[in-house]
Structures are given as C-alpha cells and as structure tokens.
Image 1: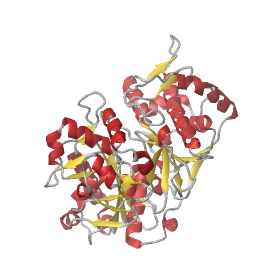
Image 2: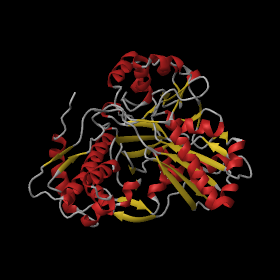
Image 3: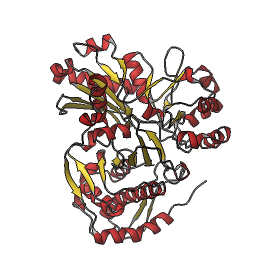
Length: 481
C-alpha cells in the first residue's frame, strides 16, 4: 500500500493506493486562506498539519488494515509558498502563498541584483515565486528575517513535521527562483541575492528518490507495521503529471484547480521567461516542464457561485454539455492578478458586455470562456518557445465539467481528454512517487496513463467564433500599474 498526500491551497487530500494502483480510499479536509491586506494571501502552517493528521486519522478509522501495511508515502503541494522557521523549527509567521502579490518592487530589485536570474532559473522574477517574498520580509519584517534559520516550501514543512527531516524535491524547488534549473541544484548566487545561503535550504532529492522516514510515534498513531519511507514528491502540477503518466516530452495537460495552467513536459529546457513561461524541473529525472500559469481557474467558478449564492453544480446544469454559441458577455479571470503572459499582480477581473437582457447562464458561460481564453494566451507563449500543443489531458476539479472541457477544446482548437479520477491527479501522482522510492521500479512501468473516459473534439463553428472573439477579449486587459 502507498499513500499520496496533496497539500493544496483549499484542502489537503490523502489517497490510499494499492499495488494494482487502485485508489482504495481518500479523505480530504478544507484549508482557510487569510488576506490581511488587499493582494496578500497567507496560511497558518499549523492548519496544514491538523488537516493532514485528520485525513490519516479518518483513514485509520475506515481502512485500518490497509493503512497498517503502507510502505511508501509521497507528498505533493502548492508551490512557491515561503514558510520561515526559527532555530527550533517553529514558523515565525504565516506562510506567504503562491498567489500573494505584495513583492512587486522586490522582483525588480532581485533581477537588478542578479542579472543571470532568467538564464539560470528559466523564469522571470514574479511576486508569486518564493525568493522575492524573502526580500520583502527583509525590508518590512527585518526581525523575522534575522530570526529565520530555515526557509521551506509548504510540503517540505509538512514533511519536516512528519519525519523530522528538511528535504525538498527539485520540481518544487524550481519554483523558488533559488534553483539552477539545468543543474537541478541550489544556486549560490541566487541565494546570496536574497541574503541567504545553502544553510537556510533543505536537502534536495529527485521526486522519485527516497527522502525520509515517518516518525516512529506517528507510525504507531496510525497503526503502521513499519515506518513508511517518503519520496521526494513533487509540486502539485508535476505530481499531477506523474498521476496521468505525462512523463514523456510533448504530453500536454491542463490543470483546472484553484489556479490553472497549460503544461508540457520536455526533455530539455525551452524557456521563454520574458513572456511569462515557467520552467520547472519535472518529478522525473532528466525531464522538465514548461508551463503557462494563470492565477484563477476553478476559483473563478467558486467566486461566481458565491456571488449568486448557488452551488456550482446548479450553476453549470442549465448550460448543458456543450456551448451552442459564445456568450455575449466577456470575462477577464484576473481575480487575483495574473502571471502568464502579463506578470501583473494588481490587475483585476472584469465582466464586459452586460445588458438588461443578460441572464445568469450568459455570465456563468462567460466565466468559463474567460479562463479558456487565458489558457489560449498560455498556448501562444509556449508556441513562441517552440512548443506545439496538439492535444491535452485535463486534471483538477474543473475537469469534471463537460461543458467547460467542450469550451476549452474549441477555444484551444485541440482535442481535450478527461479521466475518471482526474481531480485526484496530484495526490495519486504523489502515491506513485512514494511507490517508486520504495520499489525502485522502472518509472514508465508505474507512471502509465489512466484510461481516458471521454474526448472533447473542437467544434468547427465554435473554433471560428472563439478565434474571432479572442482579439477583442485581449483588448480588455489594461495594466493598472
């Protein structure tokens, strides 16, 4: 048996997977995010631990026998968060999350201090990444910065609590701006530019490599026969790639979680940082992932659901399974700013084209189309880097919507595939990494694609209609800074 634990932004999800790669059970617990000031996004690391323990306690209550024989554990997690620890490994403040936009000025300072940043990391300095957050801390909370002895990404902090060891995998680390992406190692120049050194960093391993062992008292708590080993694990999107078998160059996929992304594994770095393309190490050795990332995807649907006071499923039901024509309303999905291609943390969303005749269905459809148009922006900047997307798999909670996937197929003009368990991709991928760390099996023997249950083909009429709408949609963006 193997466990996959996904520390997301909105929830912790834990899956129990058997040797035949069947999900035996899953548990999740919600997480809360605080925004003490506009543009800020933080979480208390204590709730990550509480939520994770709750999922494992629940699995023990319902599947004690299976949990007892777990051999390997993999972690996946939200990327880029800055968790600052003191000399006793206690958090000094809430974690600053991936969608926090406070460090705009620090991004400029960082690139000035270290001109080789883009060439070394494959990324542009953006407020979402970890390194600018530390410059912000040094300026605005100098006493916290002075007391910081360790900086961990969210899942690495969770691993520290579970195992007592500070270890990070290269995929998550590559979203920090401290990693030399080609060498898959910390960059001393990057660390020095933020006033840090390797002493502040966790040990690095590949995602499928052994990393640590569960604390003995926790193994006893959950009735485990032996102390399971932890894999290096992965950031959420690389873990999702492992979960759907996207381990070969060109196997594109779309993540429709709280945030969204269009991601393509590559066997070499194909960076385009000037247009906001992200370069991450894959959780698979010798592979990378190039991605266009948007800050709001399924969270846009959650927002409109709260606005109308109607459950998401009820909002989607009247739309049917596919659009007939584009919505007369346009939506910019920049509710938390945007990364690719704008790198604009202060821009905000917009509904355009409202009239007395606008109904709820038109607005909901426009929200889904707006996210799809933002992913078309990602497609185009990836194309500028020489990466062509011919088809894509869909994962994340948004992949449950047949209507949304139909929209995506026609906006992107490529077939979109979905899986039976697409929303569990990251946790399932983490479980696969936990298995690989224990068994040493061939990666391609374990990381096979799940069965596709449906393919959404582009509608030729809608392809043309959306292509006509896209330029006008792009004209709605106006930088606020």
